[in-house]
Image (cartoon, rainbow, N blue to C red; front, side, top):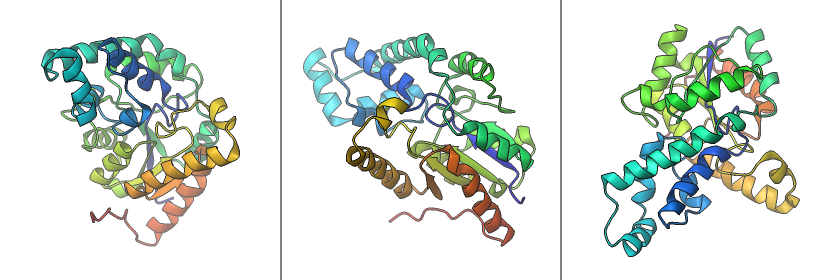
Length: 272
């Protein structure tokens, strides 16, 4: 194959169907301050460093208005620190329980390894969280060759530094020989900025924010509606491939490999 490696995201892509651990943590942290966050609020910024995520939420006009009404002043750096500590504590308490592997991962990994692809990973989680999550996933058989967390680089997503660290460790060049697989707009932007291919996964993503049983239990019309909405958002973000689930990843990899063989590099999203 022309492809040399895959870099996976973690929550919402290979573990934690629906990315429920961080969503619940953010809602809990803000609820302690009297602010009720909707899924739509949180979903906008999934995939970035968790402190950056809190800053982005606090910058939303509707959140600022409620905060000011409750606390009599705009949120300050101490409020950000308090929210971040609370959210991080909640995630540390629950991240191991969220480590269940997402269906289709085993098949995708088997295919990748049969083709000789290296396996790396990036995440919006911090290193203390990954020091719990990575061993919990390893006990189920998922052990990428490399992981790096958002607090281990100067800036997390959408900056490309975590992908570059993967390429350095895995000794892969050029970036076009790599596929980034994730479930968020931030994953797609990270891939674009690094010059790698992007594959976005829908059903398990934070844009759906439902567990596997909940998603499959929806009436077909409702299920199709939210899947189509998430698919559209990821495609508009510039994902080269948007797949329903990881069982479709081998086919996407074959298409990418064929395109590379014919000299095609990852297309860049042209802003409108």
